Image (cartoon, rainbow, N blue to C red):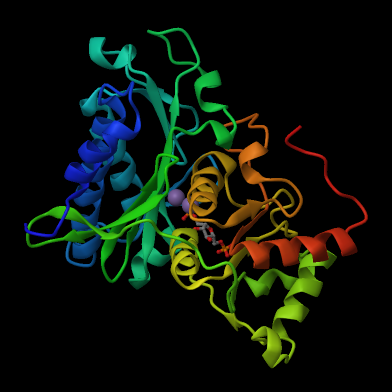
Length: 342
Ligand code: AHG
Ligand code: MN
Ligand code: MN
């Protein structure tokens, strides 16, 4: 296609960014792209096939599991196993990590952590959902895959990305050399480069938070929300409140238009709701690579120590100046500054 660069072509062209790369990471990214196309096909037919609704079970998080959660989980794990470039996968839908013990995979250099379907509550009502993934080089001896491979700080990620199944389907990823977005062209079944070198605006006029939990928010968040609602034309306030309920969709919007997404501690989620390993770390890596900022209100997300697979953290992520401003309210109104990530 003249002028159009597919994901595969882009990955191969950019492989030279990594002189020692023998193509494993490239093939791993392409395996993820393939699984995303398969999941996209089901998301787009949802309503016509038996993929909506709940499975009637709950996952390790105690959350209701939707049929599409299971379908997406199986497709991504299956594609990674078949691709042979990773020796194991940690998933939101699995209590522990899955290892691939076949000859090719067991010596693979990478592990993947993923949320196969982010925004499950939106599946049945036709609102955008997503997939998030993190790729790490293994730290355990070749031929083995252990929990240490997954419990690495976000700053150690080799690559991270997300898929958003929305009005169009996009795959956005980084390998530490900027952020690039690819839009799926269904007529040729390829992700094509549509958003080269994505940069998040330094400031914005949108804040994204579930204000239904206002009562249980930290005082710093309550004061920041009051700030967002004040009338001050000079600083583009009041800001607009946009909250989709799919973290991927909320952060993707802010990546393009500028804005801040906050999921703080709440009465129901005293450590925050979003998971560090496969939601916050990948999105933090991408937003930082696009010139934004991501913290837990005090500490950089990518520096937080990872002690368990499904560990949760508060997250303040988006336009650098907005996140810095919100952190100012957290410091000013929070007597106890949690010391984490040390
Ligand atoms: P998941 O569907 O993978 O469990 O993730 C849902 C997350 C995130 O996508 C979203 O921002 C948040 O849950 C919404 O939570 P609330 O419904 O509590 O606002
Ligand atoms: Mn999620
Ligand atoms: Mn999920």
